[in-house]
Image (cartoon, rainbow, N blue to C red):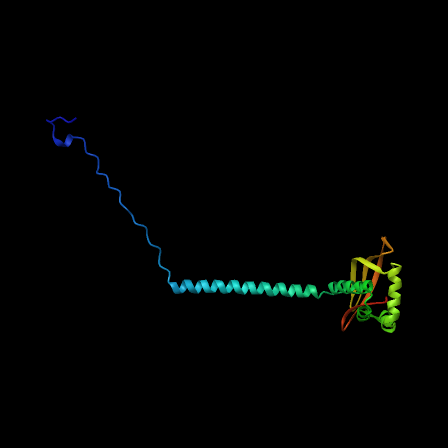
Length: 178
């Protein structure tokens, strides 16, 4: 405590006054002009559309090329030919063969072929292609190795080959070259 007889200077100094808390309002973000925002959104949307269209076109080209690849066409042709053999479709066999094999199908009458087919079905001797194992393409010719069996002996599977030639109408099954 202070002595009343002492001058004021010797009294203990008072603590400095404390500042009262102040409220600081948030700063508003700068305003974006609406025209610029709309333009940016439109540009972003256009970029997305262009990229999507480019991807779709690229995918379509890839699928088109894959679908038109010779190996795929050859595999499809073998399946068509095997189905025509299995069902006895002489018209399909005529359309999908070439060379001496085509000569045989084109020169046998429908009635004679029906008789041959009927006998082959009764004897269960029509080959069934169970898998196409390999395709080798050289220019406009191809050889495909398949695994086949007959209904007479389904447990006896054997490797067989198909010779094919590319014609103006597409790939056709032919007799092997001699």
